[in-house]
Image (cartoon, rainbow, N blue to C red; front, side):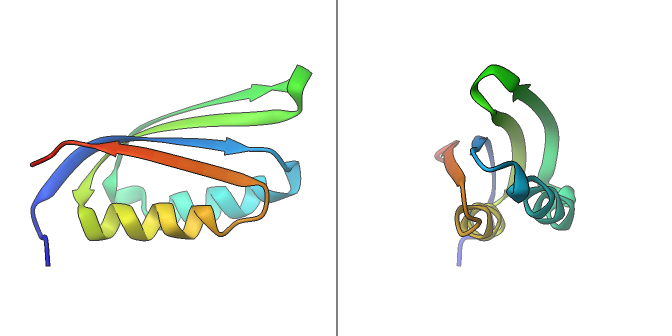
Amino acid sequence: MDMEKRVGVVGIVVEEFESANKVNEILHQFANIIVGRMGIPYKEKEISVISLIVDGTSDEISAMTGKLGKVTGVNVKSAMTKK
């Protein structure tokens, strides 16, 4: 198990407005690893884009992105430091 903390960025695109509450619920569950958050509603395209700065173990970050990725209409990508 990798218990070493990593810093990274997580990009979330919410394409279905109905999914926004579920996304926020998940982010609240993982508030302890979220350092910063910026959310932009792109009304013309009817999507929302959220960027997160995270600081946590690989397991914590993977658990969060995994849960987010299972939400209908949500796309998630992440990039982490190597160490």
